[in-house]
Length: 401
Ligand code: CTP
Image (cartoon, rainbow, N blue to C red; front, side, top):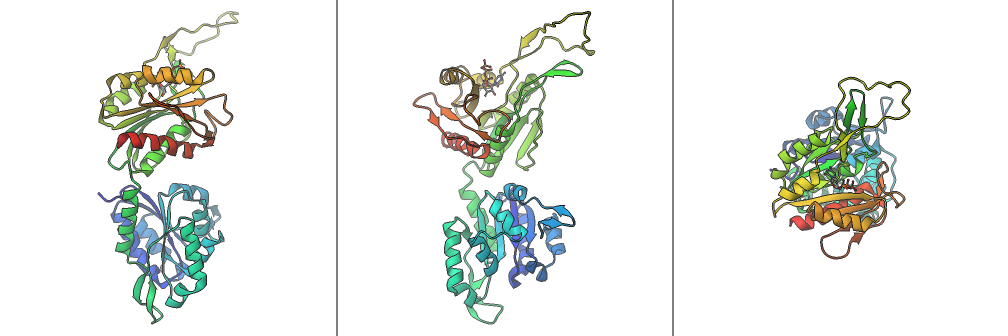
């Protein structure tokens, strides 16, 4: 299987005669199993048609920030991609990238991206060797942009020397190699539980909590970025990841979550249990809506204990499986976290405290400590949930080696 299978690639095409090769490149990317979105500069559309690249990529091609009155969300596109490949990359686009200029959609997407960006330059010999281009290439490489070496040979101008865009097959090989070396979880299958559970009281009401599912979804996205296949058991939330390597299993109650976890976890290398599971549910679910009675000012509910998914999986996990739990506390944080770590047989537990500003449920940030069975906890600064996911997955990956 190609390392490109299921990967999301943005192919940026800029205005060079080598743009005709982008059609072959698109075809090869799709054939390798990648999901491809093409962004063209206006100059590129003079060399190859958007219709050609759109048909081959099976997705509409975008050129402008505004398309027929509709805004193309460059931030969303930048975050969507696993890799951005600019091929061909002209001297002009490279100069803009080196200077952070973003006067077209492609440049705006590159500036918004968190994934690795790669360029396959194509230009005439004199442009390639010009001190300005040399300077820009140095800046780009210092910024972490990866360069696919140009070929040496006859150029469109008739000059002979370096400047020719790498062949599509070479670009594919470069991408595959890059993906394979940063894919430390390739071949691993990981269960992630996320979001709240809902426990019905009657046909119109339920008990739940404030979990947004954002932390669990960020974890699932980081895991697939690093090559894993994820089963995401997701409670009712507003976000739904669409990555082809994230298999979403919607759940509502703690009992649904237990049934799905017991079915799926035996086939997994690890589990990360980020769901905020209701510890109790109403003892009975009323068939009809519960009505107010008489002049009673109070109403008591009978609740019964829900199954503990983490404890169940912890009790049955194999020695080769890694189990990671979460503890959200408001007091005696470390003490409670250590107790849960032992009681549920976690390999480590992610502790967050509601006392830390910016940590917890609905926001986009979190502040965590990782608590292991032995040694000191590892504490991290307040970060975006995406960056927190990277820290958690790093710890998991080192245990899975
Ligand atoms: N968890 C679970 N099933 C439950 C309750 C919790 O799988 N019924 C998991 C959570 O996903 C989390 C960990 O156990 O990874 C700790 O959850 P938490 O609610 O903090 O722990 P509890 O054991 O329920 O303790 P308490 O509510 O008393 O703090």
